[in-house]
Image (cartoon, rainbow, N blue to C red; front, side, top):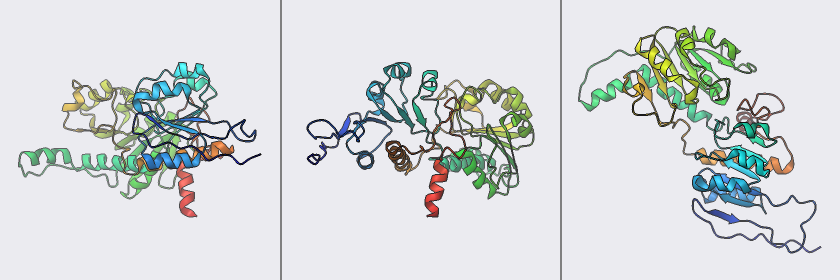
Length: 373
C-alpha cells in the first residue's frame, strides 16, 4: 500500500471563521486501524499558535474555531467540543443529533453545558477544574485583604483628596471557612496559611484533607462551620444541591460581623437574604466576583453598599489562561485518541465537578507531577 499523502493545510483564518481544515488527502479507503476523521469545534479565544498546538496533537482531524457567534450551529456537526458557550445553545437538539462524543469545558464551572439532556447522555464531559486555581485564589486574597484594609473607603477618599484614617480589620489569625474544597479551595487554603489563619472547610466528598486545613467536614455541616468563621468563602460548583445554599439560615449562622466571599457562582447565594444580612448589620460586609444575574442589575442594592466589593467575574483572568487551557485540552486529546483516562473527567455529571478518586486524574495533580519530574 502506498504511503499516505501529506496533510493538506490551508491558511490561518481569523476569529469567527473555520480554521485550517486538516484532512487526510490520501485517495481511496482509510486504513482500518486509523480512527475516522474527527471534527473538533473550539469556542474559547485561541490564537494561531494554540491552533497549531491542537493540530499537532490531532493530525488529520478538522478543527473549527466557531467563536461565540458560530458555536450554537457548529456543535451539531462536532465530534469533540472544547469551550465555554456564552450564547444560548440547543443542547437538547445536539444530544438528539447523536454525533457529539466529548465536551471539554474551558471553564471550571459547568452550568453552561450540563443541562439534563447532557447529564443523561453518554457524552463524556471533562472540566477545566484547577486550570485557573492560582488566579481565582489570588483574586480571593485580593478581595479579602482589600476589604479588611478598607481600601474602597480610601480609594473614594483619594478621589476627593481627603487624608483621614479609617478603621481596618485583620485577615491574619482570623478563622476562614471554605465551602467547596476543589482545585480553587485547596489553592486558597495554601495561600491563606501564609496569613496564619485557622482554616475550616466543607466538601461534598470530604477526603484527602490538606495539611493547611484544620478540619474538613461534609457539605451538610456548612452551618456548623459558618458559626465558627470570620470569613466564609464560597468555592463550590453550581448544581441542584448548591443552588441557593447560602440563604437566611446559613447567613445567620455566620459569626456576627462576619464577611461572605462568593468566588463560585452567583446563584449559590439568595441575594435578598444577603442584602438583609448586610442591612441589619449581622454581616459586616461581602465581596464577590460573581452575581446572579450577570451583569448585576443597576437596581440591585448591593451596588450602593459601601461595605460590599464587586468585581465583574474576572477572577480567572490571566496572561497564561489560554496557554494553560490549551495544554489541558491537548493532553486530554492525546489521551482520548489513545484510550487513556481523561483528566478532570466527570464520573457523575450531575455533580458538575471531577471527584478526587484514584480513577480520575486531576489537572492540579498532573501539573504537580510534571513539576516533580
